[in-house]
Length: 439
Ligand SMILES: [Zn+2]
Image (cartoon, rainbow, N blue to C red; front, top):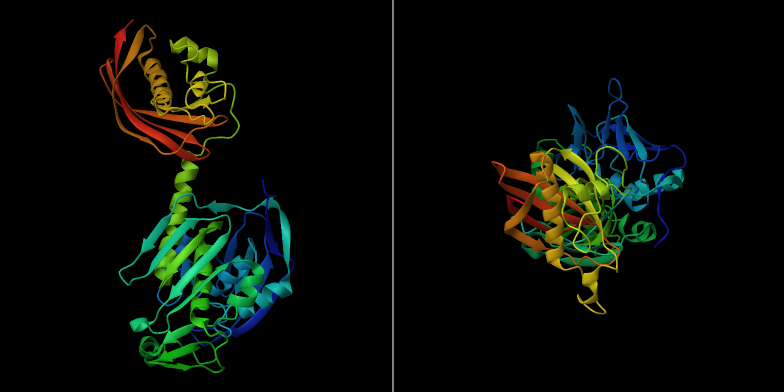
């Protein structure tokens, strides 16, 4: 087991001022320390009551050219560069206070924010970091040709292909994202825009603060910028910068490998949403780590008063809780001493899938017997539909068996939707039908 990584905040308040991109006004940004599990919050110092907005994907409002978040009628624009710097430099908790609706644009890169974080310092806190570990590939894509794939990896990696109109300025870069790599390779990369995209905005006076001071402008094959390119492949580096910033809205650190082709704020946000959805799904299935005793569940004696099954065929050690009359979670601890491991398979013990179906059936039977208030009957399997075995169950695993009665006709026929969970992942599922006959 690797040592747990701890959450970090900034050591002290630090500030910097500059021009807001959209309004052209002067804005001062202050970075403040925040307690554990606070996350990143933006504070609008210029508004009455100084409202704060959580940097969470749920608060995403628009993704045109820049990322805007908001709560109620309050907005903050262009949050991706400072979020990128905070995330990559290892700051989990901070308050970003501003006296305007967007951070100072600086030179269009994340460099000013890295400098700010350096001045504030980064200090560890007492609670472990929250991670999103990629278990299975995920992907999002858009009609624009933008594609993001997220693959399992024990580090946070990004491999990115950037391509402009007609595939001009096609660039590729792959890296592990660490604070040192970010500071050296990514943070200095500036925003770039296509002339045909910004011309209408300039005409409408929508980017008053925009200039060659804070963006590279691409016009045809020409690259216009105040200073020479900082990297030959500065564009793909800035794309990686934006991906990190947009995915900071997940609110957890990602352990996985992002493979991006022509990424943009919209697909970045789609991926962030998919990750949060997957995390929510996992949390919903996560069973408590400690098994409660007392009211609410059944211990093994009570289970055996209801079920006729005995060793080696009793597949429920205990019922954790009854969520409702028709829904409960049972536990089966799988040890190497299970008789079936002797032959399934010698030297490579795997719990037979049918035994998991049996465990689901037994937990579902407990629900039914309790509902019918009788144990004088015995349940017979009639069918098992949609049976899926997703992952092997091994000696030492604790199976959480979830069962829900979906239909019971009279007192003789019942249907139950069941799934088995090990380490927060579904290992098997089935829809079972039973009939009940008197013993
Ligand atoms: Zn950007």
